[in-house]
Image (cartoon, helix red, strand yellow):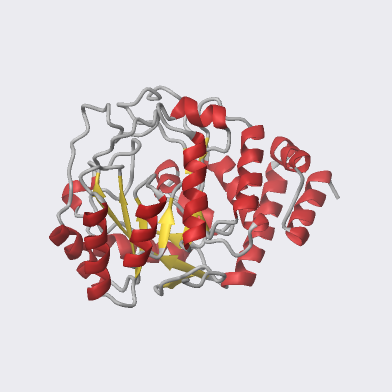
Length: 351
């Protein structure tokens, strides 16, 4: 048996490898060994979650952002971005349609928009929770204070997605002007302490990113033990400073998804839209290596194209019902079953 297969077996059995071993795995894995890795990661996912894939309804409620992340199409400096904000009534219309379609989780995602202060976010959370009592709310609205995070949690938010983006301080601060790596880490620590189901994650194929950086990401995630991990390929956006950079690859993303599943067996692992944007079967391929969450879009079709984090984003013209049916068909076609429950991480209980 090859050294790489031995390392994969060790990861399967012990859910851990040293930095040196992870680097060997990333540097030297062959196509045949990638298939072996995928089989092992899917086996682990099946052990914890069966053949199910959880569906979440995504609502992109504002594309205003005060930050200037170098890769992001809704960065503050992008004067070509067509900005919008959904009203509370419009957000509720998305939730009503989502409820009709069977969703039990709504993911509220937006740029870091000062217009949506704590009071407005709390009002949105409480309005959704009062109407849909058995529904989970996930927030993905960036860096906030401990007090803000705590208020959102007490208002009824259940989960918070905040990608760490990269565990390399140097790379992080190069790609995030006037942002602090330490503050990002503080946010993740605060979210865990408060009691959220926490989602972290990173981008694959950023300019200047190396396998050594990925090893740091993997070790960081192993130590943080988030409940969810979202990773996806870097895809350039025409109105950003990285517009001419090469995109990340599906193959590398699938390898890293597989390793994450083996390192953190019970984690919730999304199959992202970005993968489907790179490859027409990208989302199905992610499910086959252990991903178990998809997030069809509930946002009004009138704003979908405006939430342009990267170029070539798929499903921007699809109505919510079509989006749901399309993805359900893809999940079943890939050999999995759809689970429309809240789909909490099996280790999480609300404090």
